[in-house]
Length: 568
Image 1 (cartoon, rainbow, N blue to C red):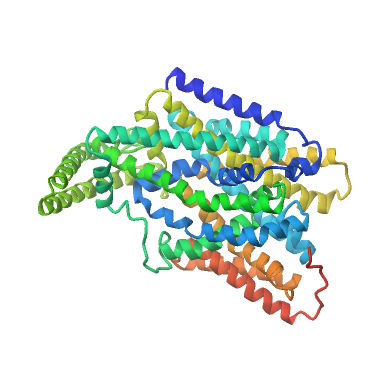
Image 2 (image 1 turned 60 degrees about the horizontal axis):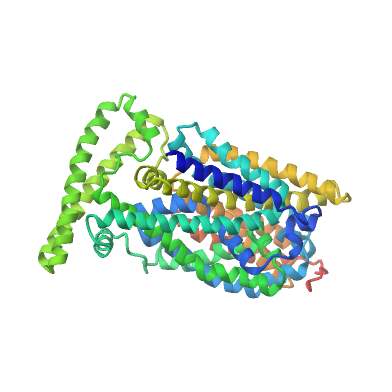
C-alpha cells in the first residue's frame, strides 16, 4: 500500500469514530441508548439492518466463495424475501406493541423467567461467537498488508468499534451504518470496474462470463432436492426461510434495529428494504468473486494466496515439494491461459465443434491447476497441523493488494473496515442490551437509576468486545468464513424460532412446554448435526419442528391453566 491508500484508510477510521462518538444525543437515558427513543426513519433502520448482515465476512468470505464455487451461494438467500414479508406483517407490530427492549423480555411475559433466561443466554453465546468470526475477516486483510501478528490486527479492528458503540449507543450504530453502506457499495462497484477493465485486455465481458460458465460458476440455480446439499433452490428457499425467520425475528441484533423505528409502518418498511435489495447485493458480491477467477485466468495467480503460509512451507521440510509444485503450477497456468484464449477465439468465430473441443481443453487445464493448488493446500495442512485450513479467505484480499490501482486499494480496505465495524457495532450493542435488560436488571439490580444501567451497559459492551477479539484469533482458519457464521447460527436459530412460534402462534402453549421444547430442539439439532450429513440449513427446520411438537405435547399434558396475558 502507498501513502495515499494509508491516508484514505486513516481518514475513514477517524471520520467514522468521530461521527459515532458525537451521536450521543438522547443516549443519556436507557431507552435512548438502546432504542434511540424509537425515533429513527425507516430508510436509516433498513440500511442498518442490511449493514448488520453485510459484514466483512460477506466481502472477504463470499467473494472467496464466488471464486471457488461460483454463483450457487446466492440460493442461500432465496427464503429471505418471503421471511421479510412474513415478519413485517406479524413480528414487527407484535414487538412494537409489546413495548419491550429485547425479544426475550417478551418470553417472560408470555411464559416464565427461565424460558426468557435460556433464550437470552443462547443469543449471547451465539452472537459472541459470530461477532468474533466477523472481526477475523478484516484481520485477514491487515495480516497480509501489514505483516502484523493476528492479535494486533484483531485489536486494530475491535478497539475503535467498541469505543463509539460504548459511548454512542444504538443511535451511533445506526447512523454510522448508513455511511458505511455507501462506502461498502462504492468499494465493491470499484472492484468490479477494475476487474472488467483488467479482463478486457484479454477477452470481452461476455466471453469472460462464458468461460466462467464453462466451469459451472455461473450456475445460480440447482433444483435437485437433497438434504445434504447446502446451496440448492430447495435448501435456500425452505431451510433458508426458517433461518431468516429465526435471524430477523428472534435475534436481538436484528429485532433491536426495527424497534428503533418511529412506528410499526416504518419498522415494516425497514425490513422490506432488505427483502428487495439483499439478493441483488449478494449477487454483486458473488459475481465479483467469479470475475476474480476469470481475471486470474489471464494473470498469473499465486500458488497460495496467503503469503504467511507460503513462507511457512518454504521454510519447512516440504520446501522442495512446494518448489516442484510451483514449477508445475506455472506450466499449468500458461496452458490454462492459452486454452481460455483458444476457447474464446473459437466462440467468436462461431464454430461450435471447435468451441466444444477448446472448452474441453480449457476445463482439463483448469482441473489440473485446481489439483496442483489442492496439493499446495495439503502441504500447508501438513506443515501447520491445521486440518481445516482453506485458502479461499485470502483470494480477494490478495487481489486487492496486488492488482487494484493506488487509491482504490485504500478505498477497498476502508470498505472492509466499514463492513466489519457496522456488523460488530450492532452486535456489541445488542449483546449489551440483552446482558443488561435480560440478566442484570432482571436478576441482579432490579431498581437503579438510568445512569447506573448505562454505566453497566458500557462495561458490558467492553466485555463482549474483548471476548469477540479472543474468538477472532481462532476463527480465521475455520474454512469459508461466511459458512462458519451460518453454521454457528443454525445450531440455535431454529430452536429459538420454535419458542417464538409457541409464544405468538398458540394460546395453549405453557412455560413448561416452551422451556423443555427449547432444550429438546437443541438436542435434536445436535444429534442431527453430529450423526448425519444433512446440510446445516435444514437444522433450522429440525429445530422449529421439534420445539413446536415437544412444546405442544407437554403443554397439553400440563394441568396448570394458561393465565398469561397474550394481548400485548
